Amino acid sequence: MTVTKMAAITEKETVREESHRSPAFDVERVREDFPVLSQTVNGNPLVYLDNSASSQVPQAVIDRGSKYLREEHSNIHRGVHYLSQRATTAFEGAREKVRRFLNAREARECIFVRGCTEGVNLVMHGYGRKFVSAGDEIVVSEMEHHANIVPWQMLCEEKGARLRVIPMNDAGELLLDEYEALLNERTRLVCVMHVSNALGTVNPIKEIVARAHKQGIPVLIDGAQAAPHLKIDVQDLDADFYIISGHKMFAPTGSGVVYGKAELLEKMNPFLGGGDMIRTVTFEKTTYAGLPNKLEAGTPAIASQIGLGAAIDYLNSLDRDAAHAHEQELLRYATEKLSGIEGVRIIGTAREKVSVVSFVIEGVHPHDVGTILDQAGIAVRAGHHCAQPVMQHFKIPATARASFAFYNTKDEVDRLVGAVEKVIEVFS
Amino acid sequence: MSELSELYQQVILDHNKKPRNYRKLEDATQHAEGFNPLCGDQLMVYLRVEDGVVADVGFEGSGCAISKAASSMMTQAVKGKTKDEAERLFEEFHRMVTGELDEEQTPNGLGRLKIFAGVREFPARVKCASLPWHTLHAALAGEVSTSTENLGPDIDADRVSA
Image (tube, rainbow over all chains, first blue to last red):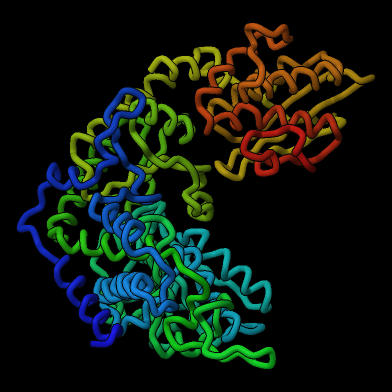
């Protein structure tokens, strides 16, 4: 048996053996999978509500990463030796898991990157710089994360192109008619987030894609905040580019994926040049490798990407519908409790949201909220959430944000509510 | 919660609610803008310097309770001081909040400003307390802006640039 055949078989087995299902969602059971959660902070049990910034990592992912480092570490796609083959098999196995997670047609459509920011920059350099010229337009939305604004702004500056912005209403929902009115024959790309990190809004992304496609315009979707909460099907969405960050979906930092339709990825220029992305190199001319290697120069974060594969296995081991229902109940409960407190205003009241509650307290700066909550062992994000235009829309400098994962509990919501009441007491 | 009450003392809460010298000086001889891009805090410090003395001082801006109270108490502390005395206070304040100066052991002129010593226990908040002082420092030097991103992780004053 050849090494390649053997690797292919091992890869299949790995993918199969790790997709076992448990029948029901039991939050206390699930919490045991996350060692970081069982610690005290400032004398109180940790309440981790900063999942939108970075989610925690289950033991299975930690184990998979350390197994790689202990037993399989080597460079990929290079060695004829045993370890390199094992590393390559594990790495490409993770790509196959990503393919299934996103329901991409082919694994080569899944480009490994370090995270969403790098992913957007990859498309900006590889696709944007090739296909956008002076007078062209790129459409983003008012609620975008800076990672899906700044690269496009840089491109517009370089090319003399124009950035157009889809407005949102005061609930934090995009205005679709205004969006459609922005599209024209000069629009080269629409770049929109699936789910808002600052507001929790779930955008009607399928509809957004459909309206752009009616005019032949490709759509890039920032899926960083969708991946930990929603099932994603890039074929059903008909996404042209869909980008995810591993560390927002229970994998280590340094992992992430750009999904792109093969025909678009084929047309793109390489992003970074270097090893692994070439076919032949002479001083006169270099020819590039095929997908996905053309877009993956240099040695990647192998352990992290293998960890992403393990995080996908972990998610598949849960009843994701039950997990989602649990998160939605946390959202409902936290929204009800917090908005019941005098002086608290919730920022982001879209009809469809993931379990993210951004709020402000009258007369108290969010950073003071964050510090006082931290003293109670409660981790929230306080700031502009890398979405300064969202803050400008609501005319506030910042918000405090509680973002829930499926491992959070109603008791933790109660702890949050109690601490918010304490903040108001201190500042009254 | 003991550290917390050390940070949010009544005096700080009071200055947050009723900041002193919270106004633009129309007759300012120099001013500077301070900016913390990490949290979006932004403030203007205005000075009227006469014969090397800070005759009047005011500030405006948005920020957390710590930065507002630090700004308010700073204006009280430097009003009527010579530029050199104000600079010396800046140095002492900066060294206190970064843990280089034990305000109880080493003689200093901090007085009521010692209340900010507690911020040392909150590394993420040190810049909130020191931003107004860095802005004052920039205004005294005739610079127009300062930003915490230029200050480095430990807010090394030597690295401030215009």
